[in-house]
Length: 263
Image (cartoon, rainbow, N blue to C red; front, side, top):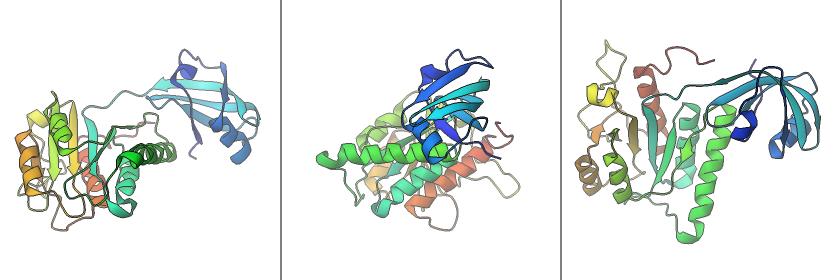
């Protein structure tokens, strides 16, 4: 049975040993005690969002405070290469749906992209609120999928900013495009995606997904000039909310991320 997960500050788990007790306060403790109505002795997990997970049991709880006795603490190794999803803004919260699913599938970082053909625009007065909505979406999905390491959400980027990201050392870029010739997945007798040595040794793989109207030709040229490769998923044309998660699943399988359980 999956244990309930609660997010705590990184310093709360630092140096904890089996048998130690720690006190959690604030919204997470309130959710455990008041909403989930956990009783003393019930098991739970505490995560810091940076890869550390503590398994333990509730000792006592009241309102917005709970005491947890720790049974085990471990820090999950950071996976390489990192998987970064650059998701173009899309209408109808399809961008948020993509980010939510990508978080559940193990993405390490998400980047909102104001593409030329994005219908949705983050204007100055709404940019901060919209970005916070992405952060909350990632947090909820990370907790639901019981992740110890939570994805970060970068600031909104333009195409110029995206090109700079793709040029960062150790970065390999993939742009999903329906007219691309190169497939992301390998031949029928192989399950691994087409990743040559340069890509396999990358520090991060940046996956770029365009808006509903597609990536403008001029943008595609600029991203290619920054070192990105255009790839396709299959014969079907996927929605903006589906393409990124589907590609992340292919990459995760090909990179061996799903070859064995982490817990």
